[in-house]
Each structure stands twice: as structure tokens, then as C-alpha cells.
Length: 407
Image 1 (cartoon, helix red, strand yellow):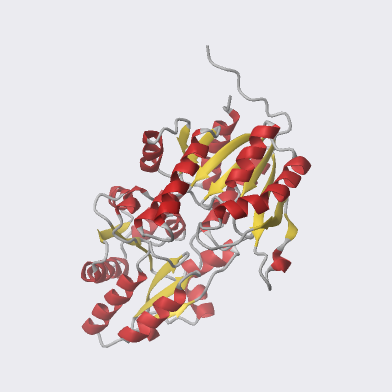
Image 2: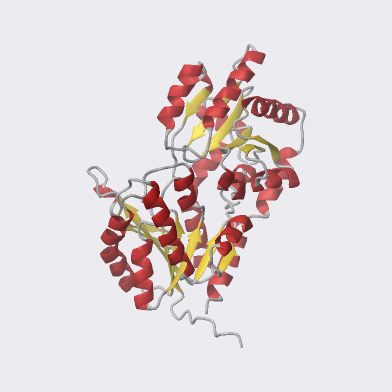
């Protein structure tokens, strides 16, 4: 006999995200997209997020009202890899308890990474009889080990510790079937796939000429855009090396790389100077407003996803894919062999995928896409059509059905 579903008496959900919100990242767009979709379905939703207690950032501790969505930036979080995870969870315990008692949610959805509040919330949810859902966006514990970040002994201990929490949560959702299968192999049974999607009302093709006028980009320039945080998994150095190869083939400086995001930008800036392509790179920085992000994307010709060759990245579908496509941008990706991203790009004719760290193949891919677009190829219409099948409201309804089906 099937067990009874959990009774959601208050129809109240609390999302938890370890960044000050709103943020410029796809993690915030995922969480806020789900929350706002649930609000339209008659649920009450709040977001619990963090602030940095360091000098100059204490002012980010606040409660925000964003339409019908309330955001509590009230949990202190010290950001030094995962070495202070236990300390952060200890610090988070009382603020999390206060918000749980105030909001009285039926379920808490914790966005991973990171896990700086996960232990505190796991204990509190068990004590208070609240359902705990893990939104597992990537295998960050495995990345820490693979890239040898921090203390290896601690990272192995952390991985096993977090897996134990995932096993005892009420539901784990993740973004691809490959990551879901990996979790199941580690003993996590109640796993569902909830893809990253895109708000196709906000992310849509806008006037290219107007966007370029605002950014002061010439009409004949071929613009490659990178959206997101700059870090070790995304090899923008390979993109810079491809720009050198392209510059050698033409006397015109017609190729431009736009970087729309934060992170390790200074390293990329230094490398562009050492290669002599600094004039072909423009840094816009992180932007929180999604409409502004969509407008800047519309100024570009193609979106770039320059994956590293780490085998872990085979399992992932970057949220960039959906946002690029929704704005009418074909996608060029560098991927490890056998990547899910490569399969999507080929299956749905979204652009070109080439091997990771291969600047020559990347330069040829850029030239090929450029020639197709200048010839009036219907590639832009195709990618927009693909994005609409991953509209975030449709995906949110799937997630809500999984939550409502909890026992």
C-alpha cells in the first residue's frame, strides 16, 4: 500500500541560498524563478539567504520585499572554500531557527552548493517536522577533490558527511539525469531530475542594434559573450588563445569577447595582456537585473561555454545554455568527450561543440558559426524554439508536483 502524502497545511515553502540576494548568478535566477512560479500557484514562498559579516558588507543584512516574494538576508556566512563549513553551520543555527519559527514552512528547499547552512537546517527540520529538499545543482564536493582545492583529507570527510545528509533528506533534485544516477549509486534513493530552465518572458531576443548602441559596439563586429562566474571549470584562456588565431587570419579587429560576470577576472585580464588581445576583450562585470542581462546578451552573436576537460563536467548542462538560446544566441562549447552538453548541442542543432582546451578547433568553430549567421542561417530561430521547451514555469510545475508527492 502506498503511504499517504504529506499534508501541506500552510502551503508555505522556504528556499535557502548561500549568497546575498538578489544576486547576479544563475543560482538566484533558478531559485527566484521557482519561488515566483509557486506564488502564482497560490503558495507562500520566502527566500532565506546570507550576508558577509566582514567590514563593508554588514549593510547587506536586510529583509527585502520583491513583489510578493520576501527575502531574508540574515544569515552570516564566511566564504573561505569549505574549510569553515562547520563554523558557518554553527553560526547559522540561531538565525535559521528564528526564521523557521517565524515562517513555519511546510518544506525547506536548500540550494547546493554551498552547504554552509545545510547541517543546521537538517537538524532543525528533523526537530520541527519540516520536510527537507536538497536542490543539488552540481557535484561541488567532487570538484573540490578533483581540482585539489584546500585540504584533501577534509574534502573527503566533507563529501562523506554531506552524502549522509542527502541520504536522509526527504527529496533530492538535480539538474541532469547523469548527476541523478551518480547520486543513486551513492545510496541516495529519492532523486528527481529538475532541469535548469529559463524565464522566456525575460530572456528573449531584443533589438540587437539598440543593445550595441548602448554598449558602443560596432555593427560589423562579431561578438562572443561569456555569461557567469569566472573560475577554474570555465577556460576563458582557451577563448583568448582562439582570438589570437582569428586575429592572425584577418587584419581587422572584428572579434570581441564580452565577459558578463565576476570571479577571477583579473587573471583573464592579465593573460589577455600577455597575449596582446586586451583590445578584443571587454569586461562588463556582474549584473543582478535579469532584463539588463538579456539585453546585453542580445548584443552578441554567439554564446560561449568553455568547459575544462575535467570528466565531471560530462554530466552537466550549464544554465548558460538555456539563457543564451532564449536570447537567440547559437552556442559554441568546448567540452570533454562524451559530454551531455555536446549531445544537446548536436541533437537540437544549437551550435557547435569542440574538444576542451583546443583553441584551434574553437577558432574554426567561431568562423563556421559566423559564416552561417552572415549567410542568413535559421540557427537563431532554432535556438529560441529550443529554449521555449525549457520554460522555467513549466519546470517549476514539475518540481511542485514532486514536493506535493512527499510522504
